[in-house]
Length: 447
Image (cartoon, rainbow, N blue to C red; front, side):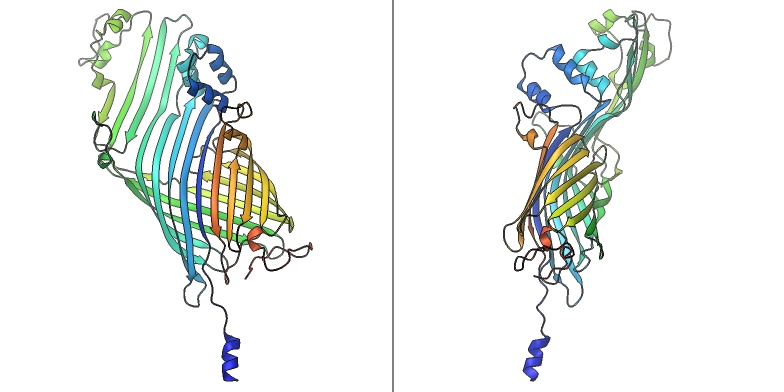
């Protein structure tokens, strides 16, 4: 009897929590179509009509973004008899963000002949490029699945330039001009590259600390689930000693003469007739270049925000086999939030797929397809394709697309003792699929 009671009191030990490995890459623009980029890449003679067609649909501010990276996550078994387990993740990502004004695009490729007498605005134009490594460690609750981590982020390298304030004006008679320019450039290098190029030991990495976590909320009365996931909410310290360049100047011309040489020489205003256009052509301006721009390899250190990511998702199951979801994503240098709404189907215990509508971020409206496949009892493969036609590069079908993206994820579902999220992960492969409306998707499956 004593031995039997010991056996009856035994409970299976809790298993390891969720684990995943994912890779992603996407490129998107709100101004440059796939047809434009493919033609521009191919080269050859690009007519004025080609650029005029692109400008016809160009927004006031054009942009393009690129994101590519990988991440690995895992959680241990609960510590002792408590509900908390150790969780952590590691990964890398490359971010590219580019913004430009429509006026600058037109001036670069068509000139200003079509809009003399109008002020061209360049303010807000710029580009940022960064390569990041991250490591986070924290705790995860096996029942609520709430997670909190401390993240350490390394920016391996970064480049940035921008025009906070810039404008250009030419009179209708093309006899007067006004230019105003404030621009800067920064690079994480401790010296200027020589003829041998950039060497890795000249790169100045930056480090930051942030908070990452996940807050899932599941209704006990309705088949609803709300999930907020945030990553790297914190700051980064950029060391001193990098490269910096700045331009802060402006001038106004009246008539064919350009009487502004006195502004760049000591002594102030004089009675000289100033620089003529012929002086500029001959290179006899007498202007010192150092008076126009500043360049140094001893930039001051500064504190920056990390490329934070915030993702929120609301899911609703009107029936056990039908899922409706809405998502919002911000951060990662996105110029505006990215909104996604869609519907999914779960026809079997192993398969779910859906179609979403996505807008915002780096571009306009586009379709998104996704698929979840239970390859084994505890392994699930997820694939998401952003704007599928965009991957048909160079074809007629991709001409009117503005980007493309893909995400692959292989997950290990949490084992016994862990709450599983609703939807396909909650399906128990050993039992029948739910068929009644009153049977809500499980929130604490223990296979």
